[in-house]
Length: 461
Image 1 (spheres, rainbow, N blue to C red):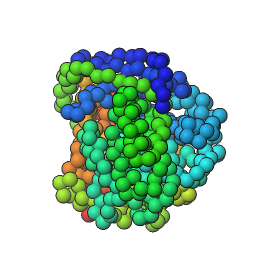
Image 2 (cartoon, rainbow, N blue to C red; image 1 turned 90 degrees about the vertical axis):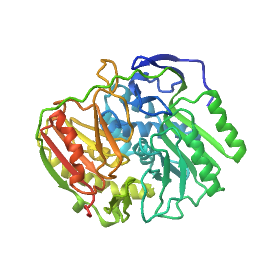
Image 3 (tube, rainbow, N blue to C red; image 1 turned 30 degrees about the vertical axis):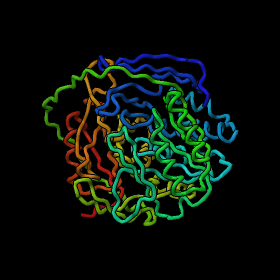
Image 4 (cartoon, rainbow, N blue to C red; image 1 turned 135 degrees about the vertical axis):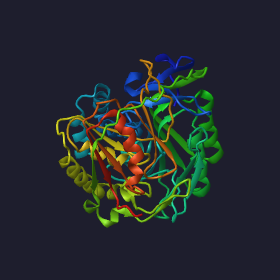
């Protein structure tokens, strides 16, 4: 990617003393920066800033079809740059994302006419934030695609075939578990999908690992919404190409450079004693809607030694997924969505669907089939400073122990009091019903009338 002269220059003052200067040099779909992200300060000694995406459904709630469209747009951009095939629908998809209008029309077009992919390609999404984004890029194609995502979880009865580090992260170790030992044993191009690239070190680390394990791999592409690498970091990709005799393509919706100065002046909101509010709770098991081949019989052990014996889902892509299997399992996702939609207590009210951690894509897909006034976001491991300053991105923060991976602190952000009439929390594999109590207690602070707990797999205690 050769950067053009500066198209846009913005300076963000984050919590007073942290300054982030952004220079945009390539913006093929003419996004305004505010349509894609806002700035926040992260609690991390290695990186003080965070681009909080407005189109991922991670830290901020979105129309669930928006992240799916972003994945499709990146898929089209990839097809254009790497394979020289331009999809005429791309500008209309970009406009739908930008204006939050015409979403159903372009989504219907994509469902009826998936993107043609000319050759076999392996897509890898980065945990935790880009598991759904990577899946959305992969699922936009009609054929020749397979998908897997990295994970921070320790799965007991499987051996990780790829291990690498993400140095700047709050949780640095990545693992890749493929139930098929032959998953990487072909010459297909590898496409790495992340939400944002700042140094490119994570991609370099996994490319090195893959090349060492599978020396016949020759072609790689790094796909992201935002690419902020400096010229020096961009040069490292070229050096790696020469060193390993490979080709690395880069694809992004925004290309540019950021510079950072100062540090945030932190004055977090003090926790207020919330009035006790008893939501009406319901538990919605959906295992009867899933086939036995949709489950991966694997257990896990949390960082503090607590086991979770419940099965994982094959449809997440954590263990490898072909595009044919993806389309086969999608009918089960739609069946779950129809069942959950029937359980809505306030059909015309504002409803939030919450995914958990790495488990984003399936809840996002479910939310996209649940009708109008439905929004989606996910819990996260990422600790972000919150503040009541009027122009600051993260105003509310909810802290709780992960119901699926006990001992790991999770967060939810920006759910206001009386904002939603109803909430559905969708878990892949809860360790127990009681494990959801800390999250329910946090949500009681914002007075949600109805809270539904949806568990995709059977609880094994």
